[in-house]
Amino acid sequence: GPAILMQADRNRVQRNRVIRGGGIVVGPGNRNVIARNRVSRALDSIAIEGGRGNLVARNVVVDARRAGIRLGLPQPPFGGDHNDVRRNVVKQSGGDGFLVAKKDDHSTLTRNVAKRAGGDGFDVESRSTKLAKNRATNNRDLGIEAVEGVSDGGGNRAGGNGDRRQCVHVKCH
Image (cartoon, rainbow, N blue to C red; front, side, top):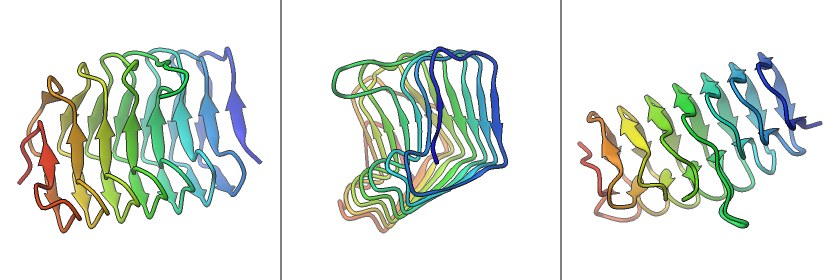
């Protein structure tokens, strides 16, 4: 079943296998570590819906029904801040591989991989997000769809995505 942390601080969710169900959801919670989990065919695979200073690292997400890894909520608009998402692999998500909602503030996505997402590899709707060294390949839409103002930390790569531009508002190689 799902791991849901609500009003939860300083927890570690590590080395779990989650198959189907709700995935791993934090909302809200501060300074939690979600690391080295394998999530398959879950609805919301890994989501930080609120809170600050959470770390999402070295997880593998396969066949998410919607977004693979999500920061914040698009509707109702809600988000956390200063969350760190690094070295995760998301393959074949039904929606975007990685989704950062508009209300999420100052989060960083580094060295993540999005492959074969049904939407964008990375859909970043928050201007305060920083992207560095992420890779997006063979996604249905863009490799990285970032809003204007997103901080480009360099080293992002994209190829084979459905939209020939590959990336918008960040440079991709």
